[in-house]
Length: 281
Image (cartoon, rainbow, N blue to C red; front, side, top):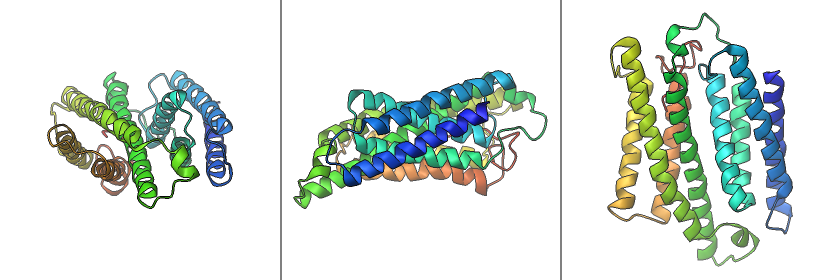
């Protein structure tokens, strides 16, 4: 049942993506209610799917690559939906819905089932705590990157004096910079909690806080990168285009750490062994 709901959610996200992108290319309006309706319907189906899988398995569905990609997509759509309740901006939807769609279809290529008996460590309450914090931080960084991309595009339109429809439907530069500024400490705080909870979990499970697993190493690199961004924002006063570019660069690092490292480097967090795969960042 949960797989059917998962596929329904993926289809709704896909339909929403098509509606949003078509709206931006062809419509003269400034609000896309149908795109928002489909992505919200997908979020509802997705939520029920995750709850159903949790009930069926008897533990939080966060132990495989399928679970991680699915939850990551859910968090992005959930944050997007909250933001859209304040301002139904079609550009944000046209970015969030396709990203969620890609994650859902990527998840569908992986097995949701544990291919071997689940190890006791994955039945710990640390699992939902650690993974939820880490993925929530990633989701916030994704929204930051969307705001950064919109900022750069909006600034380019203004500099070229192309004051047309796209300029009008995009949030103002001040709004986008404020979103970036407010999201940065939240995402950094969640990332920090994700790393700390992972270290505490590792200590209770294996007697060591840190083993320099590839994902742990790249997570630390990501943490230092965002710590530098926080310093540049608060101490040096960086804002505007510089902050937008940094948000995009940070997002690229997050995606490499989250997905690239999991495929390229073997370890406790690798996609290769689904029974032992756990997200760190």
